Length: 261
Ligand code: ADP
Ligand code: MG
Image (cartoon, rainbow, N blue to C red; front, side, top):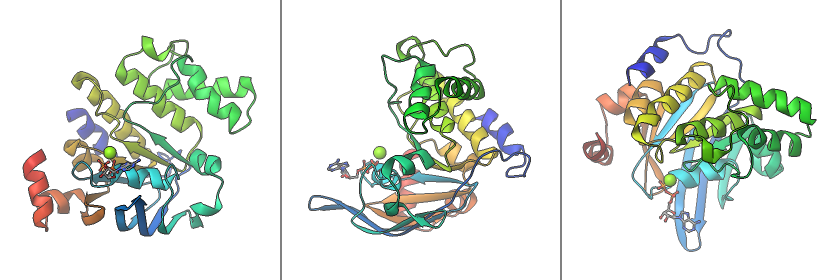
């Protein structure tokens, strides 16, 4: 992860560096059940604007469900989520999802559309843009993620890393206030992981508000402003990378690090 190191060395969140429309999230007492099983058991978390929050924890601890509840792909049963102070339950789901973008492990691109069309679709459908305007934005965002010249490619003709960059460009094209990343490098071939992590580190450095579920401990350590450790539907421990990695407090976090590091 030397390249992440270099990116991280550049000062963050200066007004020049921030060209994102960063928003904050405030999560209070969030509970969510699937049937009889309570999967989120009272989550309280502040995500300040222009910050990177990494969520770590064992499989099944509720990390994906937490992310999905933040843009209402699943509905919470209790508690409150505020986006820039406004209750997300008072927003139309499409409006919320334009403001809180999400990038998934398996890219979720439309296979029958080109990279450019994948990005244009939400701009024309949800933002009501003209084709010309949408095409210009799509090409600009593709260039931002290093895919200039690849707009005409269909997903099948792109590598996994390139497909994930298209998915990131698609999220960015909506001009979101927050972007959620759910294990976005877990399905990639090892040699493609670093490029995507470096792109995410750069977005963080440029001030994008990001919530990143990841197994990449090097990324969490070097890029996160705060790290949240979840287990069994609760936040067991949270802190700065230095606090979490150098002085974990709970036995559960110590045990988790012993397994993954
Ligand atoms: P993580 O992302 O940390 O691995 P998840 O949020 O995916 O955890 O899952 C938390 C728990 O909820 C797990 O026990 C999982 O099996 C269960 N779960 C996840 N999605 C669903 C669903 N759609 N219906 C029922 N149970 C689910
Ligand atoms: Mg998950």
